Image 1: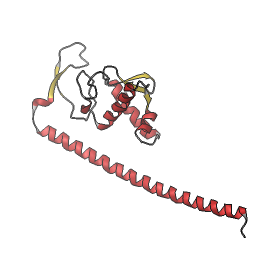
Image 2: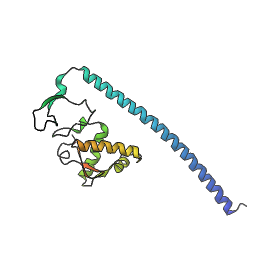
Image 3: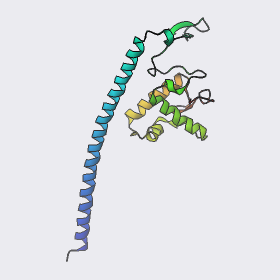
Length: 178
């Protein structure tokens, strides 16, 4: 009859073997996910390039608008080409819909809008990464921080404290997420 310690060792070895197998499978899935994400990003870039080429070939002057030059403080407006659709973050202005932004920026605005609606405080980029289902690794967090800072600089978000972001009051107004 086997000893109790011997039985425990057998169960421990079986459990360790199962854990090792699951870790190997998780590593394989992570590698597949990384490849799939790269492929997806390449398709997104390709679509954006096609959109840009098609938009440039239209030859329409409807893409130009009278926008004041921020460097000409209070000076006359200048005629300027508007940004290609979703390629840049425009300065927020009344009536500007979130749909002018890329999906990543819209996702940040939506998360912060939900928190604002629930009267919750600002978020850090690490909290956003976790909320979006991303690994909270420095590369992902810094990518979100870069986007959030760009949104702050353009008036879409506010940074009440260093590293914490919330929807800007003006952008949170009625119709901000339309």
